[in-house]
Image (cartoon, rainbow, N blue to C red):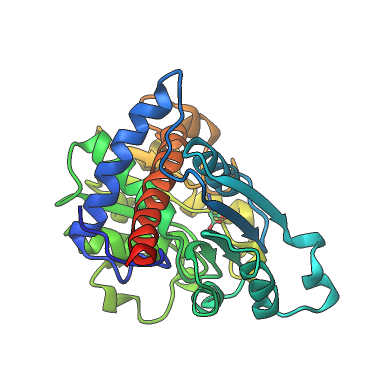
Length: 313
Ligand code: NCD
């Protein structure tokens, strides 16, 4: 087992062996989660605090369930109604929580870099559950596990990531992970939703969806991140769906056995046709949710091992 980090802040600092370690351990948790008795003792005695400064349904539920199945004491802080509203800074909130001796802190924040900053101020393990447009490491890991299980490998695949690339931490973390594992990544979207300097990542960029999907093994769709846009980035949702919405006609350009992914929440009729999303022969969206719990259990288990080892030293 190789995973030497104190935190899980992004995919960027991980090497391929560490990514494989997390995914291999997650496989064990997939099996546990499918059994009747879902309990493990990996986090027994430890306290996990979930701090979500941005709305979340599946990620927060997934981290909560993961912690409970591993035997941790899990607390969800509702940051919408917290002292942050009274003007407390992120750092003061973090220091207050730190004084309660948590062992694992799961943080989502609207600002890129906020979770890294917080990790420097506390003495527990920090997991990034999404920071602004920066990273969402557990999402990329759960996507990787889903791909590896469906395609039988996680290298030399052609993966098309389509939609609002510019505002997406999911795209960014996936791009980094898939590149490290030696896959071919294509980014598809209107030029207004493509970040500057994207070519540095060594991927191909397309504004024509049919060309971009040609021969793809994996088609990953993204939501338009309206909450991160100031101003109009697309002419209209109808026009966007016409050019970039995944429907049967466009999907036919990908490989016959290509899988369709979406991190959720999904906007049917904007970036994806509802019948494609529900097609159990193509769409792996439900598997992604299942893999999410297993990957988060694996990540927290590994961090807890490092935490215990560091404290024992
Ligand atoms: C994503 C996120 O929050 O970045 N959702 C998720 O974690 N499942 C993607 C999104 O919000 O569109």
